Length: 275
Length: 193
Image 1: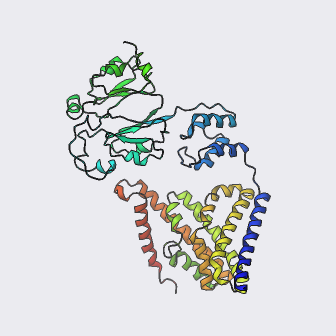
Image 2: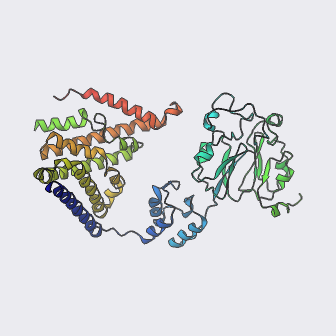
Image 3: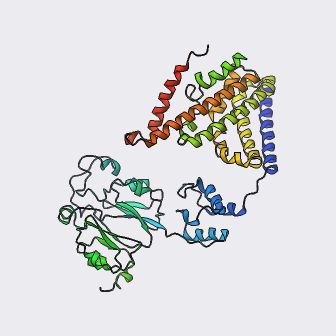
């Protein structure tokens, strides 16, 4: 009987003594933490992703209370929570515009000439380095093999028709897909930017036409049509500066190949001023 | 006296806890990315290992041996080390906030570190006296500090090298480096009888 009793007693006793010691120590050596820090920590997501540049949500909460960081540094929390944190801190939110991922390509499998039937590894990072550059004949557009879908921690990207489609309600703008995309065809834009060029090909018009029916041919009609000079040509593709763009939608109506998309609600799209 | 010195030197070089005993590889790879954090980790390990050796030696000699419960050493050592680290963390936070800032984040990592437990178990297996245990613990943890600082220095240079093939960047090259360092440390075998 003692063979069982002794160990149980000793180990239990040790555990009890240590537990009591720690409990005592935590009271005796209690370090007052700013209440606000605890409150903020509780409403932060707690994913410890580190996107804010601090060691986890604890570190971020501490930095906020000490005033070293901005409330808006956290990419994941919603605007409502940012305001709540700001009210705890007693400062105005001054929220930075949330960003979302955006795909600069509209070349779905039916619009781009397909070179071959791809049967390799279903990973864009692999397909981008093999000779032949994957299934589509455009070597600048979306490969559509779904690497971004796999890496997205928020389930916000899905492949439809050979194109990555971003769900802007789920997307938090963490930028992981942008980093992983071997074609650099994904980028982060402000959530409010609704009018964007859906092409990434810097090739000249005829070369683009050979492989894709909806690629930017570099005609510069949009550049001339833009009332606020928000569009410029980079090599042979138009790029809209989302910070200058007023989302008027004129360029989208002028584009001869329809490679500028207007993602605003239907009723707004109908009110495009005739320029 | 000479034997203690020999024990100390051999714990650092010949029986280096990381590179010849392969204990504590997790922080060795995880925290060796930057020289500063590697230093912090190494110093924290020295501190905890020596404290833990003292406590476990006392507990083993005065509690487990008299009661014939030697077989419970793993369980009780883990219990002692975990409670000790937690206790030190709480006290440090209050008394030495500055030291806590530099060591604090590493302490929880060390709680269940096999290097710390390994040193305590080695002390017991070798039947060291209290003084020998402490010298061995100090030597082993200084060896840990040495190895992790060397590793961090190498890794900082590796990071800057753009010629490394993509598939080897990060952890793979770190593991290869660790293997090569381990082979280099085998050169110390035989310097102490």
